Image (cartoon, rainbow, N blue to C red; front, side, top):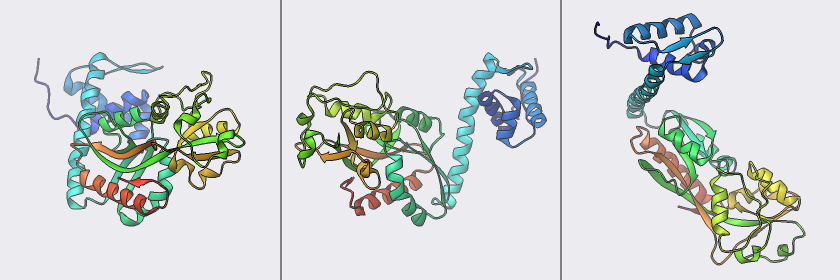
Amino acid sequence: MKAISSGISIRALGYLVALAEEKHFGRAAERCHVSQPTLSAQIKKLEEQLEVRLVERSQRRVMLTDIGAEIVERARRVLQEVDAVCEIARSYQDPLSGELRIGLIPTVGPYLLPMVAPVLRKALPRLRLYLVEHQTADLLAALDNGRVDMAVLALPAGQDGLEIQPLYSEPFLAALPAGHPLCQRPHLKIHDLDGETLLLLEDGHCLRDQALEVCGKININEPQDFRATSLETLRQMVASGLGVTLLPRLATEHPFGRTPGLVVRPLRNPVPDRTVAGVWRRTSPRSATIQEICGVIRETMAKKKTGVRSA
Protein backbone atom coordinates (compact mmCIF):
# COMPACT_ATOMS: atom_id res chain seq x y z
CA MET A 1 0.00 0.00 0.00
CA LYS A 2 1.44 3.36 -0.94
CA ALA A 3 1.78 6.19 1.57
CA ILE A 4 -1.23 8.47 1.84
CA SER A 5 -0.51 11.97 0.55
CA SER A 6 -0.42 14.75 3.14
CA GLY A 7 -1.10 17.46 0.56
CA ILE A 8 -4.80 17.63 1.35
CA SER A 9 -6.53 20.80 0.23
CA ILE A 10 -8.32 22.87 2.87
CA ARG A 11 -10.73 23.88 0.11
CA ALA A 12 -11.53 20.23 -0.59
CA LEU A 13 -12.30 19.66 3.10
CA GLY A 14 -14.67 22.61 2.94
CA TYR A 15 -16.38 21.10 -0.08
CA LEU A 16 -16.78 17.80 1.75
CA VAL A 17 -18.32 19.47 4.82
CA ALA A 18 -20.71 21.44 2.60
CA LEU A 19 -21.75 18.25 0.81
CA ALA A 20 -22.29 16.48 4.13
CA GLU A 21 -24.58 19.27 5.32
CA GLU A 22 -26.45 19.90 2.07
CA LYS A 23 -26.64 16.22 0.99
CA HIS A 24 -26.76 17.40 -2.61
CA PHE A 25 -23.90 18.15 -5.01
CA GLY A 26 -25.68 21.07 -6.67
CA ARG A 27 -26.62 22.82 -3.43
CA ALA A 28 -23.17 22.22 -1.96
CA ALA A 29 -21.53 23.70 -5.07
CA GLU A 30 -23.81 26.75 -4.93
CA ARG A 31 -22.98 27.25 -1.25
CA CYS A 32 -19.24 27.07 -2.04
CA HIS A 33 -19.61 29.36 -5.09
CA VAL A 34 -18.15 26.81 -7.52
CA SER A 35 -19.54 24.69 -10.31
CA GLN A 36 -20.86 21.23 -9.51
CA PRO A 37 -18.20 19.46 -11.64
CA THR A 38 -15.46 21.36 -9.78
CA LEU A 39 -16.81 20.35 -6.38
CA SER A 40 -17.32 16.75 -7.47
CA ALA A 41 -13.79 16.54 -8.92
CA GLN A 42 -12.21 17.95 -5.74
CA ILE A 43 -14.02 15.43 -3.53
CA LYS A 44 -13.03 12.62 -5.90
CA LYS A 45 -9.41 13.78 -5.69
CA LEU A 46 -9.66 13.84 -1.89
CA GLU A 47 -10.90 10.24 -1.93
CA GLU A 48 -7.95 9.26 -4.11
CA GLN A 49 -5.50 11.00 -1.79
CA LEU A 50 -6.94 9.32 1.30
CA GLU A 51 -7.50 6.00 -0.50
CA VAL A 52 -10.97 5.64 1.00
CA ARG A 53 -14.48 6.16 -0.30
CA LEU A 54 -16.02 9.16 1.45
CA VAL A 55 -19.32 9.53 -0.39
CA GLU A 56 -21.90 7.01 -1.51
CA ARG A 57 -23.29 8.39 -4.75
CA SER A 58 -26.59 7.56 -6.41
CA GLN A 59 -29.04 9.36 -8.68
CA ARG A 60 -31.50 9.82 -5.83
CA ARG A 61 -29.35 10.83 -2.87
CA VAL A 62 -25.91 11.48 -1.46
CA MET A 63 -24.75 9.71 1.69
CA LEU A 64 -21.49 9.68 3.57
CA THR A 65 -19.77 6.39 4.19
CA ASP A 66 -18.90 5.61 7.81
CA ILE A 67 -15.30 6.74 7.31
CA GLY A 68 -16.60 9.77 5.40
CA ALA A 69 -18.76 10.83 8.36
CA GLU A 70 -15.79 10.46 10.72
CA ILE A 71 -13.54 12.51 8.45
CA VAL A 72 -16.21 15.24 8.13
CA GLU A 73 -16.23 15.67 11.91
CA ARG A 74 -12.44 16.08 11.90
CA ALA A 75 -12.64 18.37 8.87
CA ARG A 76 -15.04 20.68 10.69
CA ARG A 77 -12.50 21.11 13.48
CA VAL A 78 -9.69 21.68 10.97
CA LEU A 79 -11.70 24.36 9.18
CA GLN A 80 -12.57 25.99 12.49
CA GLU A 81 -8.89 26.20 13.36
CA VAL A 82 -8.05 27.60 9.93
CA ASP A 83 -10.70 30.30 10.44
CA ALA A 84 -9.19 31.04 13.83
CA VAL A 85 -5.74 31.48 12.27
CA CYS A 86 -7.16 33.99 9.78
CA GLU A 87 -9.07 35.80 12.52
CA ILE A 88 -5.94 36.07 14.66
CA ALA A 89 -4.13 37.71 11.78
CA ARG A 90 -7.00 40.07 11.02
CA SER A 91 -7.60 41.00 14.64
CA TYR A 92 -3.89 41.71 15.12
CA GLN A 93 -3.99 44.11 12.19
CA ASP A 94 -7.25 45.78 13.25
CA PRO A 95 -9.21 44.17 16.10
CA LEU A 96 -12.24 46.39 15.54
CA SER A 97 -12.80 45.45 11.90
CA GLY A 98 -13.93 42.39 9.96
CA GLU A 99 -16.94 40.20 10.69
CA LEU A 100 -18.37 39.06 14.01
CA ARG A 101 -21.26 36.64 14.41
CA ILE A 102 -23.47 37.27 17.43
CA GLY A 103 -26.26 35.01 18.63
CA LEU A 104 -29.02 36.26 20.92
CA ILE A 105 -31.80 34.47 22.75
CA PRO A 106 -35.30 35.40 21.46
CA THR A 107 -36.35 37.03 24.76
CA VAL A 108 -33.43 39.48 24.49
CA GLY A 109 -32.76 40.15 20.79
CA PRO A 110 -35.92 42.06 19.71
CA TYR A 111 -35.78 44.34 22.76
CA LEU A 112 -32.06 44.94 23.18
CA LEU A 113 -31.02 45.39 19.55
CA PRO A 114 -33.08 48.53 18.79
CA MET A 115 -31.28 50.21 21.68
CA VAL A 116 -27.72 49.10 21.06
CA ALA A 117 -27.42 48.42 17.31
CA PRO A 118 -27.21 52.11 16.27
CA VAL A 119 -24.67 52.78 19.02
CA LEU A 120 -22.55 49.80 17.99
CA ARG A 121 -22.57 50.92 14.35
CA LYS A 122 -21.39 54.38 15.36
CA ALA A 123 -18.79 53.17 17.88
CA LEU A 124 -17.41 50.35 15.69
CA PRO A 125 -17.98 51.45 12.07
CA ARG A 126 -15.47 49.00 10.55
CA LEU A 127 -17.02 45.97 12.23
CA ARG A 128 -19.71 43.98 10.40
CA LEU A 129 -22.10 42.24 12.74
CA TYR A 130 -24.12 39.18 11.71
CA LEU A 131 -26.97 38.51 14.11
CA VAL A 132 -28.95 35.30 14.68
CA GLU A 133 -31.54 34.17 17.23
CA HIS A 134 -31.51 30.79 18.97
CA GLN A 135 -32.57 29.31 22.26
CA THR A 136 -29.87 29.00 24.91
CA ALA A 137 -28.89 25.37 24.28
CA ASP A 138 -28.58 25.97 20.53
CA LEU A 139 -26.52 29.12 21.12
CA LEU A 140 -24.09 27.29 23.38
CA ALA A 141 -23.74 24.56 20.74
CA ALA A 142 -23.13 27.22 18.07
CA LEU A 143 -20.46 28.79 20.26
CA ASP A 144 -18.80 25.44 20.77
CA ASN A 145 -18.58 24.60 17.07
CA GLY A 146 -17.65 28.12 15.97
CA ARG A 147 -20.85 29.06 14.15
CA VAL A 148 -21.13 32.16 16.33
CA ASP A 149 -18.36 34.18 17.97
CA MET A 150 -20.40 35.59 20.82
CA ALA A 151 -23.72 34.90 22.49
CA VAL A 152 -25.97 37.24 24.44
CA LEU A 153 -28.05 35.22 26.86
CA ALA A 154 -29.44 35.09 30.39
CA LEU A 155 -27.27 33.58 33.10
CA PRO A 156 -26.43 30.96 34.14
CA ALA A 157 -24.65 29.81 30.99
CA GLY A 158 -23.72 26.44 32.48
CA GLN A 159 -20.79 25.45 30.29
CA ASP A 160 -17.03 25.22 30.83
CA GLY A 161 -14.46 26.96 28.67
CA LEU A 162 -16.44 30.20 28.34
CA GLU A 163 -15.70 33.80 29.18
CA ILE A 164 -18.74 35.49 30.71
CA GLN A 165 -19.21 39.24 31.05
CA PRO A 166 -22.46 40.48 32.63
CA LEU A 167 -24.06 43.30 30.62
CA TYR A 168 -27.15 44.33 32.59
CA SER A 169 -29.79 43.07 35.00
CA GLU A 170 -33.49 43.58 34.43
CA PRO A 171 -36.41 42.94 36.78
CA PHE A 172 -39.42 40.83 35.94
CA LEU A 173 -42.84 42.48 35.88
CA ALA A 174 -46.24 40.87 36.24
CA ALA A 175 -48.31 41.07 33.05
CA LEU A 176 -52.08 41.00 33.63
CA PRO A 177 -55.17 41.24 31.45
CA ALA A 178 -56.85 44.63 31.74
CA GLY A 179 -59.70 44.44 34.26
CA HIS A 180 -57.94 41.87 36.45
CA PRO A 181 -58.45 42.74 40.16
CA LEU A 182 -54.67 42.92 40.70
CA CYS A 183 -54.48 45.82 38.20
CA GLN A 184 -55.83 48.06 40.96
CA ARG A 185 -52.55 47.76 42.89
CA PRO A 186 -49.51 49.93 41.98
CA HIS A 187 -47.14 47.02 42.62
CA LEU A 188 -47.41 43.35 43.51
CA LYS A 189 -45.68 40.63 45.42
CA ILE A 190 -45.10 37.19 43.94
CA HIS A 191 -47.52 35.74 46.49
CA ASP A 192 -50.27 37.91 44.99
CA LEU A 193 -50.14 35.60 41.95
CA ASP A 194 -50.94 32.54 44.08
CA GLY A 195 -53.61 30.45 42.38
CA GLU A 196 -53.43 32.34 39.07
CA THR A 197 -53.20 30.71 35.64
CA LEU A 198 -49.58 31.29 34.59
CA LEU A 199 -48.86 31.34 30.86
CA LEU A 200 -45.32 30.37 29.87
CA LEU A 201 -43.04 29.94 26.87
CA GLU A 202 -42.43 26.48 25.42
CA ASP A 203 -39.66 24.19 26.67
CA GLY A 204 -36.15 25.29 25.72
CA HIS A 205 -36.61 28.98 26.57
CA CYS A 206 -34.61 29.97 29.63
CA LEU A 207 -37.31 32.51 30.51
CA ARG A 208 -39.70 29.63 31.11
CA ASP A 209 -37.33 28.10 33.67
CA GLN A 210 -36.73 31.49 35.29
CA ALA A 211 -40.45 32.20 35.62
CA LEU A 212 -41.04 28.78 37.18
CA GLU A 213 -38.19 29.42 39.61
CA VAL A 214 -39.58 32.84 40.60
CA CYS A 215 -43.02 31.31 41.16
CA GLY A 216 -41.67 28.19 42.84
CA LYS A 217 -43.08 29.01 46.28
CA ILE A 218 -46.66 29.71 45.22
CA ASN A 219 -49.44 27.65 43.71
CA ILE A 220 -49.82 28.30 40.00
CA ASN A 221 -51.96 26.71 37.34
CA GLU A 222 -50.12 26.17 34.07
CA PRO A 223 -52.34 25.17 31.15
CA GLN A 224 -51.05 21.89 29.73
CA ASP A 225 -52.44 22.61 26.26
CA PHE A 226 -50.65 25.94 25.78
CA ARG A 227 -46.97 26.80 25.31
CA ALA A 228 -46.13 30.13 23.66
CA THR A 229 -43.42 30.16 21.01
CA SER A 230 -42.53 33.82 21.58
CA LEU A 231 -42.99 36.65 24.06
CA GLU A 232 -45.26 38.41 21.59
CA THR A 233 -47.61 35.40 21.51
CA LEU A 234 -47.47 35.27 25.30
CA ARG A 235 -48.32 38.96 25.50
CA GLN A 236 -51.37 38.56 23.24
CA MET A 237 -52.65 35.55 25.17
CA VAL A 238 -52.50 37.51 28.42
CA ALA A 239 -54.26 40.47 26.79
CA SER A 240 -56.98 38.02 25.68
CA GLY A 241 -57.65 37.19 29.34
CA LEU A 242 -56.31 33.64 29.33
CA GLY A 243 -53.95 34.12 32.27
CA VAL A 244 -51.01 36.10 33.64
CA THR A 245 -47.28 35.92 33.02
CA LEU A 246 -43.91 37.45 33.87
CA LEU A 247 -42.13 39.70 31.39
CA PRO A 248 -38.55 41.01 31.50
CA ARG A 249 -38.43 44.80 31.83
CA LEU A 250 -37.11 45.56 28.32
CA ALA A 251 -40.06 43.66 26.83
CA THR A 252 -42.44 46.08 28.55
CA GLU A 253 -40.78 49.27 27.25
CA HIS A 254 -42.12 51.34 24.34
CA PRO A 255 -43.27 50.23 21.82
CA PHE A 256 -43.80 46.77 23.32
CA GLY A 257 -45.51 47.93 26.50
CA ARG A 258 -48.53 49.37 24.68
CA THR A 259 -50.38 46.14 23.92
CA PRO A 260 -54.15 46.84 24.13
CA GLY A 261 -55.70 44.90 26.98
CA LEU A 262 -52.36 44.31 28.77
CA VAL A 263 -51.34 45.85 32.10
CA VAL A 264 -47.91 45.43 33.71
CA ARG A 265 -47.12 45.89 37.37
CA PRO A 266 -43.71 45.88 39.13
CA LEU A 267 -42.96 43.16 41.65
CA ARG A 268 -41.53 43.89 45.10
CA ASN A 269 -39.94 42.27 48.16
CA PRO A 270 -37.78 40.83 46.76
CA VAL A 271 -37.63 42.04 43.15
CA PRO A 272 -37.11 39.00 40.86
CA ASP A 273 -34.70 39.67 38.01
CA ARG A 274 -32.31 38.13 35.52
CA THR A 275 -28.79 39.00 34.40
CA VAL A 276 -28.01 39.14 30.68
CA ALA A 277 -24.39 38.51 29.71
CA GLY A 278 -22.04 38.35 26.78
CA VAL A 279 -20.51 34.87 26.45
CA TRP A 280 -17.70 33.65 24.21
CA ARG A 281 -15.10 30.90 23.92
CA ARG A 282 -12.10 31.42 26.17
CA THR A 283 -9.84 30.53 23.23
CA SER A 284 -11.51 32.93 20.79
CA PRO A 285 -9.12 35.10 18.78
CA ARG A 286 -11.79 37.83 18.83
CA SER A 287 -11.79 38.30 22.61
CA ALA A 288 -10.61 41.93 22.41
CA THR A 289 -13.35 42.78 19.90
CA ILE A 290 -16.04 41.04 21.94
CA GLN A 291 -14.97 42.81 25.13
CA GLU A 292 -15.25 46.11 23.25
CA ILE A 293 -18.80 45.21 22.19
CA CYS A 294 -19.69 44.23 25.75
CA GLY A 295 -18.39 47.59 26.96
CA VAL A 296 -20.52 49.49 24.43
CA ILE A 297 -23.65 47.53 25.39
CA ARG A 298 -23.02 47.98 29.11
CA GLU A 299 -22.44 51.72 28.74
CA THR A 300 -25.51 52.12 26.51
CA MET A 301 -27.76 50.31 28.97
CA ALA A 302 -26.41 52.41 31.84
CA LYS A 303 -27.42 55.60 29.98
CA LYS A 304 -30.89 54.41 28.94
CA LYS A 305 -33.73 55.17 31.33
CA THR A 306 -35.23 51.72 31.08
CA GLY A 307 -35.26 50.52 34.67
CA VAL A 308 -32.52 47.97 33.99
CA ARG A 309 -29.26 47.99 35.93
CA SER A 310 -25.89 48.01 34.21
CA ALA A 311 -23.74 45.09 35.31
